[in-house]
Length: 110
Image 1 (cartoon, rainbow, N blue to C red):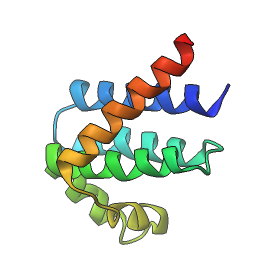
Image 2: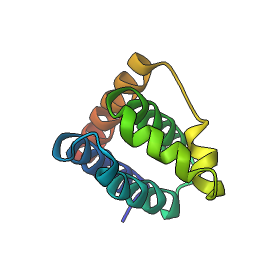
Image 3: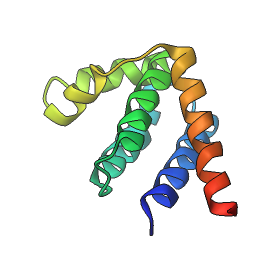
C-alpha cells in the first residue's frame, strides 16, 4: 500500500473516530490505539507529520476530555507525552487535513 493511500485511510479513520465516539474517558482507548497505529505506519515524510500534528490539535479542540486523558497517559507513556505536546493552529489543522485528503484523492484519480 502506498504512503498516500495509508495517509488517506488514516484521515478517513480519524474522521470516523471523531464522529463515532463521545468526548469521554472511555473513548480515549480508541484514540490512543489509532494514534499509535498511525505512528507505526512506515511514514517518515512531511504528510505524516502534518497529519499527526493536525490529529492532535483537532482532538485537543474537539475532544477536550479525551485530550486530558491523553495528557494523563503521557505521564507514563513517552510516546503519548511527545504527541500531546505537538500543536498547530486549530483552523490550520482542519484545513491541512482537508487539503491533504483532497490532494491524495486527486492523485489517485490521475
